[in-house]
Length: 389
Image (cartoon, rainbow, N blue to C red; front, top):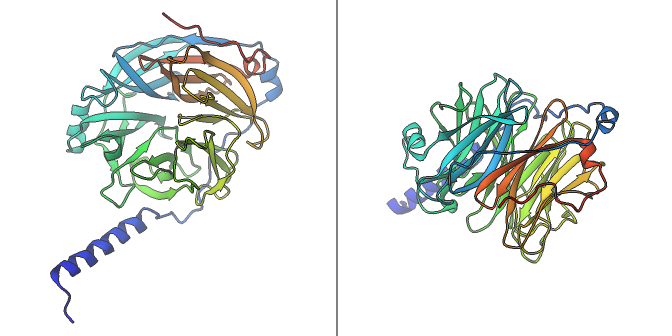
């Protein structure tokens, strides 16, 4: 019996979708391994005096959100975020500031919608969630979310690189992370370096059902692996990943399920090839973004919003046993319920200083730096940052 034209077209569509989906899970011949940093002299770090340093960043736009930070080859810290009149507006652009010795050395508008349109030859309505990092050749890399039509559920992820520290960008590569029109894929948290020079990029999907994703990609934007992280409720997203060894890593995820207002957790033991769902952490964090980092002393540090209602407290939690147990550490911000301190992002310098950037009131990005000795201090309730008028 001869197939109808519509039946043939549908079969071809299914075949193409299957081939694309299979391509998203292509892996290299070499087993992936994390470039987990070695533990430095913890005793030397603990013997240092407690140090906490607030660093003022510029506020060039009325609204700002979702920062990311990385260290430049010269040792300065590069902070990126998106800002405009409001989230989702067509005037949103990626802003950047370079910090050295506790002071802002330079700040600029790094990428606009119009610039990304010219690079991608696509309509770009708004931008969001930049993730910056430096590759092995010293080039700045940027993964950024763009929306052509609709809201965040219609988003895509682009990868660009810069030879001049984020002042200009090369042709953008749109990452193919979903076989269904490549829609509703986003990034938020920092990359994880791999031993072979590729990167692990935490990503997520949020159209209808939500899930975290582990993406392994080359510095030129070729996707080698796109693995869905398991979720028992279908409502875990925005994974943040910390490598514990060359093969092991833990992911903490934002939980949008109001009946389970705690941090979700997943883990891998094979360099990110497969992920398994683990018991949620006993840390309240209702529907808010999280950041995690493995510190140079081997401990893990989480920044979260631990109140049942609101994001008006930004709290640190620390684990010294690879994430098996967690203790309350320092309070960064605490204020009235109408305040917001959200979307934290960590970075640590080679000398052990820990940097934390986060959204402040949706009006700007705040940045602070501290050492392990400050983390170990006993005063966990007093907020470290003073509320500005």
